[in-house]
Length: 144
Image 1 (tube, rainbow, N blue to C red):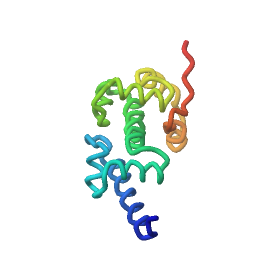
Image 2: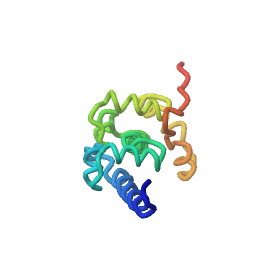
Image 3: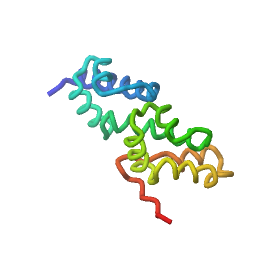
Image 4: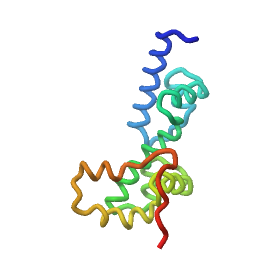
């Protein structure tokens, strides 16, 4: 069994990884690169990250990217493709699929509805209401 000092050291390293993903979400990050940054193996990082935060590093990074994508789509001045690449996703298909899983609708539909639906809502409430949920918890939007 690992000592308390080792556990605390690992937790500090995991915070560094999480903070890096929060800061550099638009950069091409993968588990191997993140693990190298804290001198861990990719497998160890993935297991420890999931144990500490309840989701894989990839899932956490995609959630950060989708949160930022939601903000960019609400602005309305960028295409879905532009937003996809602006937040660091390399595949429009993967971006759209993950966006729909977290938000409950495809990004193009979100863009159409977001500005009208939230008109007049205070910014603090706006952030609460528009924050994506994780692990496929978003209800699917009803189809017209």
